[in-house]
Length: 88
Image 1 (cartoon, rainbow, N blue to C red):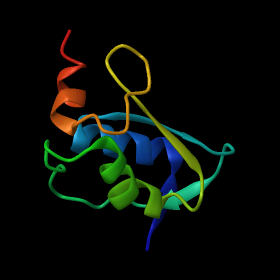
Image 2: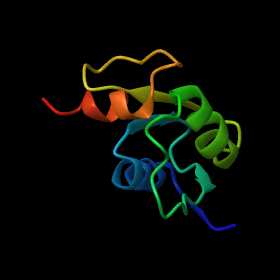
Image 3: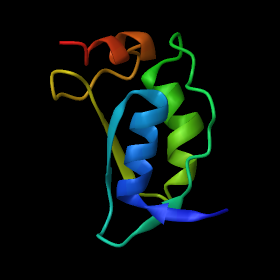
Image 4: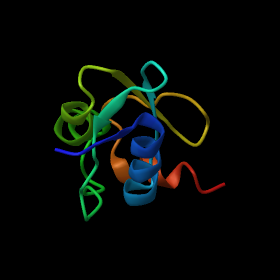
């Protein structure tokens, strides 16, 4: 699988999913490419989304989700609610 920079990965997730994430990794670190063509269902929890789509691509690097209030949402927060938190 193709490798991309962490910054590119974060930008792809934001563009596709409309969700802000920050990956904690050394500068120059590479992760697997984010190749999803459709955004995840809004009814999915943040934790399920992270475990199913994001973490498997990060080679063990830590990741945090940032909501519209610049805080980390609870893991049971639905993606629809998370996406709406940016609309201010």
